Structure formats: C-alpha cells, structure tokens
Image 1 (tube, rainbow, N blue to C red):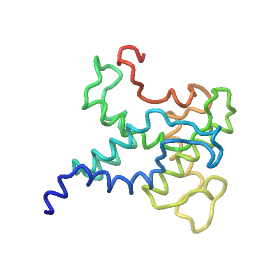
Image 2: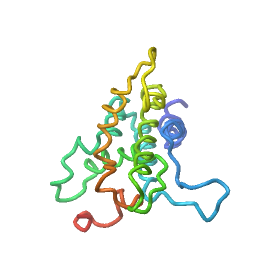
Image 3: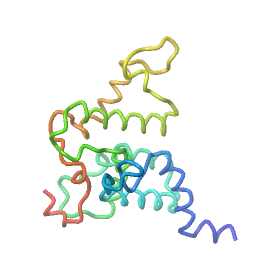
Image 4: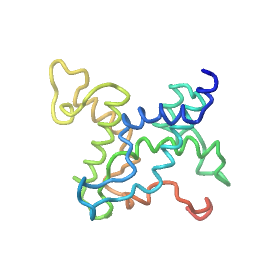
Length: 186
C-alpha cells in the first residue's frame, strides 16, 4: 500500500501544496473582493507543475533549491537550438523568484514601485529558505539581528539582475517562458 501511495501523482500534488504556500505561489494577483482588479499570473502554472514533478521524482532538496534560485545559470539556454526538457526544467524552476505578487504591469512604473517587487522577492527567499524576516535590515541594523543592512543589500544584489529596476523592466506578464516556439522568442 505504501509503494502504491508513493507512486501516485497525488503524492506530489499533496506535498507540493506545502512548498507552494511557503513560496507564495498564487495563480492570480490583485485585490481580494475587487473583481475588476484581478490579474492572471500568465505562465506561473509551469512553476506549480515543476514543484509537483520534483516531489513525485523525489528530487534532492539541495538540487530543488538550487534550480529555483539559479536554474538559468545551470544550463546554457541562450545558445540552445531548441528548448529540450533538460533545459526547460531548471528554467521553469526559477518561477520561484517570479511568484511574488507584481502589480507593475506598466513599464512606466517608477523605480520605487519596482524596488517594492524586489523587496518582496527578498522577503520570500528569506522566510522560505532562511527562516528569517529581513524587514528591519532593509532600513537599519540591530545589535542582535543575524543579518546586517550591508548583508541584506549584498544578498539583494544577487537578485537585482533579474529585476533590474533601472532598465530592462519589461511588462510583468511578458517575463516568463511563452508558448511561442523558441526561435520566435528572441
């Protein structure tokens, strides 16, 4: 019976729920109760399916986390002729960093709004992987806090290239792997 339960695809669905909650995964973004202000998180379902597959395949946790933080660095996707499953898998895993609520659909949003998205990424990473809240370190140091303000911004510098607040800030729903053939995406 145990082997049958572990082999079931529902195993991954059940356990993925817990990680997706920690990662802040949502299918839609907007304000609760305001129907006119609900935005579909296009393409984010791929990340959800990745997490379910990872649990069903019993992927080692260190590999699971590495793919989510740096999946785009693990494979040479820029020079690939076609998107193979071996290339797509770690790229899709980086949906973890894109699962934060982002309401900057207009590329004209100011730098301060863009930084709010980056701060939410930092919050998701710190609470889910480090077990820490880093809100205080964003503005100042505390004598007994484990992370200094300097360390906070050093960590944020790791994520800023993906969320470049000064340029390259494309429209939010266009920053995902599209359904277009690979050769048309470039």
